[in-house]
Length: 634
Image (cartoon, rainbow, N blue to C red; front, top):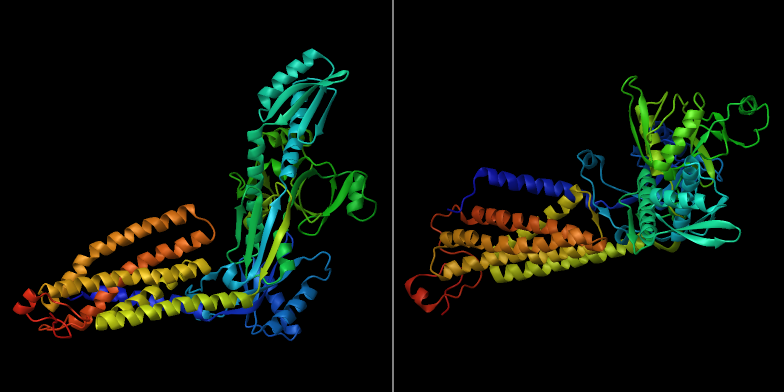
């Protein structure tokens, strides 16, 4: 009756071993480390830098635990913070000879102390949130006025192009704040322009205003358009920040909107505030210009003459100089998307760009008039520009889809597309709040959270063992198994654990034991009704399951609602809460019953079970013996 087939025990053993292995990395803690990342958008890291970093550390007399190339950064782990700081200084001097123009970002970080054999099977510790691990927190204000001004400037260019295409002569176009004013000399032209602008540029509301001797039209952004521009600016800034921070390999960064015009940036594990500012400040501006191929420019490239008037000298990715005209044809605002691909005919790696409507018109005109010439795409960071690529214009390009090809590998094409997609900030941002949480405070929070879980578990275990005797011990072991599974699943998912998450673990323990309480009380009820011990155990588990399922499903629904509609700490709580409900169902029903079956299932003539005091009604006590570890009391 109370027997399990071998495959159920096999599932439990596999779950137990897997839970232990994937929970184990969380007990090794973290070690100080140094992280080397690209300091320029056009600088790509590769495995050769790993060997160079190792050599620099060896020459400096610093012995790391290991140096590894991971993602977009090189990480070196050390035994203590003194060695970490010495290594950081050595790497900064060797990799950045010119501190004013650093090629690499050398930052302090923390890495897990897990042995390599655990890492090899992808057994990694949970990410820790800012409140547990330490790190930096920034609250950034988006300049909404600048976003509206930028949009007004773009519309001013669109108006000028549109009136020229329609052959409508104007007496001047000027921008006054977020308003655009267009002057005309005669009523007929003004009326035709008003009809054209109203039809082609619906984002502006046009009105005729007095303008002295000239007739004047004034266009102002509509309220809904202004609101949409501001919302888009915040979203684009968040996307840009994500692209930049992700390139640096910061573990589980938090970049999210707060309110209407603010963005929260949290970088767990980053100890150097100055470097953190440098990380989030790495936002680039994209520009498209024509290359000057005149004789004077060729001479300047060779270093035999001055740079011609109206041009500037930049370096390509390979370090070759290039003379580029100052006039900006397009900016990152005109770029909707950039993806890598392959040419269907030549099978060369390509970068495929998608431009907006205004960019498409401008690009079509430029490519038509400059066939055979080179066009440079520049990326500016902190006022310094570099040429990402400079292809030759083969033919007129219309339709807003541009294909850049040449001597590029597929990796270089993907990198170029990533740089172009990262784009620029839609509006400037400034840091209005800065907070650093040190590793010491993080360790203190971890200690408090761990103690809350430990003391809660101990209190529950003592109560269950005293009140339910051996069945209480089975319930306690099932609760420990549930905790093991919960931590291992979170580690396997590489979830981020914060203080709300630890609160959810403590809550899950209290909720998980409820299932065992239901089972134990149901077994007691069957014993009171006069059932044999084996029958009472079987009926107790079978009949309690429906109640356990209903209560857990309703709680899971509430957890999913928190997960869907919550954000930040609420979502972190909800993730742990939902996973804890699922693991408690497995441990409370399957694992605890396996223990009971192993202990009692093979006893054919079982007379008593250790489940604490069973109070039996007089009518039942008179007709049968009580199946319990103490005499019946009436």
